[in-house]
Amino acid sequence: MIPIDKDKRKEVNKGSYYLRAFAGAYLLYLVYGLLEDYKNKPLTNELLIIVAICVFFAAGIMLLYTSLRYLYIHRGSLSSESNEEG
Image (tube, rainbow, N blue to C red; front, side):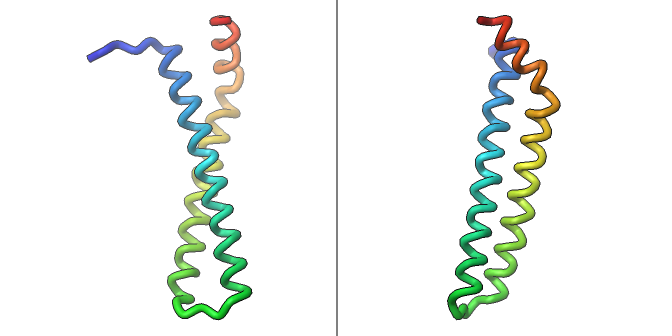
């Protein structure tokens, strides 16, 4: 097993949390699109659309909240470590 130092691991975590935040925002964008379609067009699968809206909304909020919370809590340690390297 290849050892990875702590600085590199935190940098990888930072990138993955940015990606999670982007995925959460995209899920909320999909919810917006589904809501627009639900309001404007007659649908045959109303229950499926409503369930998808609820699931995407919950997952998007969870991803955004957890990733932004992590990045906010670790903002000082992440920025100070990158300043020390430079």
